[in-house]
Length: 304
Image (cartoon, rainbow, N blue to C red):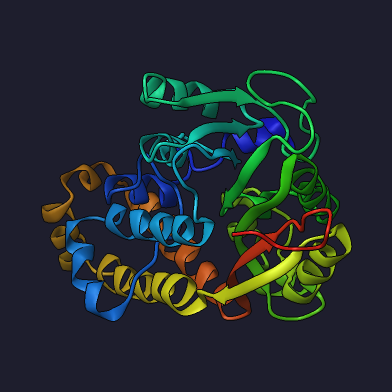
């Protein structure tokens, strides 16, 4: 996926993402982590679930004050700034200059946090706070690798392994495909509504991700299946949304809660409805997996 295409991701040009913005998306752009007890929090906005997903991911990272952490595909910079606030030396990188500009505008004054435009599949050896091999204690990538091609995801694993110090950890959180044939997404997303909205071609099969991680040299410390609280709940919320948005009364209720939605035209609402349905179709074959990958020391010992 090209840089120009990624630059337009999640923009207001797509009514689906404009709706998500009105309903709380902003500093973070991810599906969120939602459990049944927290479902009523949706009335307060979707950002509550997005912060929960970020927290779940960072808990796996186990970054400590003083750690040097690379946030790969940092987007608008919230996670990198949060790592800096935790006492880490955080470096957020993203391939799109527009995202880094937003990150610097939002969090440029955050303590111990820097941002740089860089390709996570080919990190510079020494530029903008990204230094040579074995220079980071932790690498983190939350819901960004799916934008890459299969070759790009393999290169991300290689680069994370290269820049991590021995004993370091890479937490990769990404969509995964439930079969060995990711091209089947074209049968489920027949009009490309999901793929064009999120700017990707296909999701990585879970088995292939694990194989490539091991071939790279990582020890797979743990994999965590977050399909239910992420994919399933997102689709369930989508079903509620489409139920409301399909009627005039329901739209009025949505507009009462989120007044910005009053700007939506009939065409916008129809686009949202078909886009959400396409997401639900794709979601049935999509997983959401957290990979905890450790780089062994020279003696083969994995540190924590």
